[in-house]
Picture 1: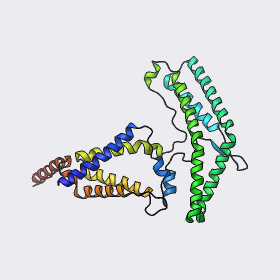
Picture 2 (picture 1 turned 120 degrees about the vertical axis):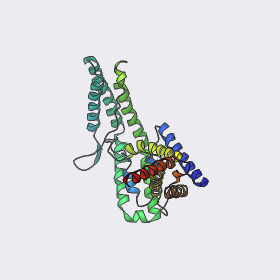
Picture 3 (picture 1 turned 60 degrees about the horizontal axis):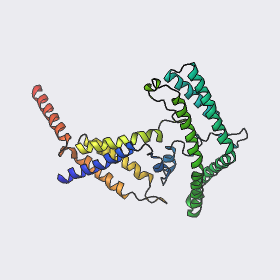
Picture 4 (picture 1 turned 90 degrees about the vertical axis):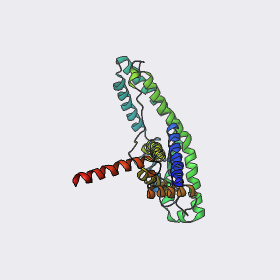
Length: 302
């Protein structure tokens, strides 16, 4: 019994600390787990990463002839909608609305300049993404180790190339966000800041996962520590760990060992199997109340 309690507390504390650390770190993201996944499920995991190749943020488009290019119309439209929302949120007067329009014009000018300045590099990058897609579709390149290594090197170079552009584009979005919110007076700012968000956020991707996982870890950990709903919490935690194991498919080339996650998952299953919360946990109290309730109900029926 002591061993089971210690196991429950140890795993619970680990989950709780992992969750609280992620909550306190706004830069944490699950994206690197998905993009670094190995094995047959890699394409599916990569789909969970919002704008994994940067096409949305870099305004990817195609010419009528099918050649890659960029088109800033979608970003301009989103920025225009955001300006209207900010004005409505704060209740801008006529002068503030004019300042907001001027602000949008100024930041769109910076956006236009940046994309014109890097036009050739961006189009070259888009061509690289097309080659990457072709390599992934080529069965031979995925099966031959040397060819697979070349393809992985090309993908790594594409990620490195896009990083500074995506960082600068993020600064432009953040700068526009800050500038519009700064127009509000001190009284208007009491209504709370209205953030611009991300373009085409989607439903089930890292936008949602990055908010869900930290609280999931913390709640599962807390439930295990106090021994409440232990079976449910342990099964949920085991399922989460299993999903991590699947990102590094055993035996897949380049897969990172997941021994620790496997051992902890098995420990979770043990906790669920024996209902470890009944030992020095709140489940013992709940079970006692439930037993008394059922007993009294049976007595009343008889």
